[in-house]
Length: 529
Image (cartoon, rainbow, N blue to C red; front, side, top):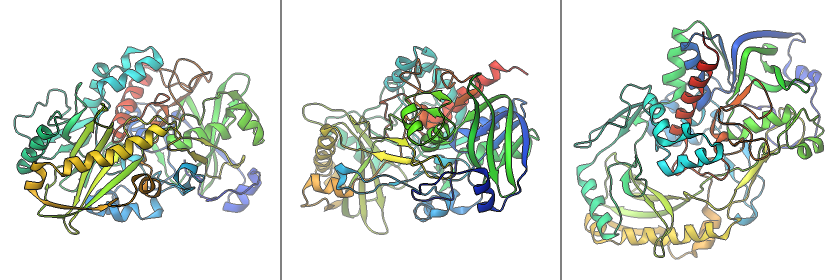
């Protein structure tokens, strides 16, 4: 949730009087009631709120951001660069200096608008069959296997493509999120020819059990217009269902946790109109994201006792894994100046699996025809490093979370990117590519690869794992039903619940949508109308 008052560490204790004075608020706390209270109007929260309202429940959604769903910066693909440079729609987050990256402070992007991280570069990759096994192994629950999660992917998708003879059987055609797989006849042939030269596998998209080789990426941009949960799930639901109430620009202070009964009694939040306590008849759903979900838990007294005690927070419930196991792929780019290079709207991608001769990388080709620049953007699909953690600076709930990012703690991750740069050079030197267009490498060029990586590496914003899913409270935060271990009426549904050590390839967004649909089904079954 948004913590808008403090952008940098300040050591002060917060009490009600301070907040009231700072925000010039009424002193009386007002109560609100609903069947379900959802904290966080991001990627998952928008989906769950829309579904619960559809299923007939009184639903209250608390969102930190404003409703920006009609803003062209959100909707138009050609304005994404401008949006990315605009601070208004982001939380002001930063990491501690990263010792393995020349002590650079990493900018951490967490969108502060309805739909949250659905506002991204557009890629819509599924989590593949083998990767879902992480969920199955963590929970001993086969309902997380790919063949069982497929129905939720299909429920989300409104999938379309102009690819000839395309097999739609595993895709949804009537879901809210419009996903388009662009096709370019010329470059499709070039990409297949490169595949043959590189002795890799080619497929029209990464689905089913095939998640390696050369392919093309689906996107949420169709004719330049974005589809995301804030717009296509939540906005229609607000118009259609009177039992759905959405409060924007709401800052959650904390959950009121009963230490003896291990129940949430309410959630305290603040708006320009004053203090409120939201009380759920059934349950509370925390969907504040990888950084703010653990932060709100810790401020509420749920977390690692050592951390909470150090910050002067009374421990209401011990869960040592809260805020731990932060994972992200990270990005390194190779940049080329080009002539006669055009891929139309298609998005070439490749997942190269590690062998004695090849690195383990996932890469995307992004072309800017205006500047004649081609960017080959590399991700580490399986980082060996747990890249960091989310913690607290102090007990002030209006303070941003403390973010530690330790990329490259494991030296293999650096080797992966160095070998990745060299492998990209091989791709660009194939006969098929050289016959298609002209290229001159600009970056890293003659620079030492390790130095280049340390100076140019940025987060991929695929942050996961800080409230990881698992069997018990010793090794995780939530169980296979998304319930917080040991708390009777609190669930977490967002990217923070991915299993410890799991890393997505080109982003978890589509899988978060599918998990939110699964969570809504679980709630519907547990609380029948």
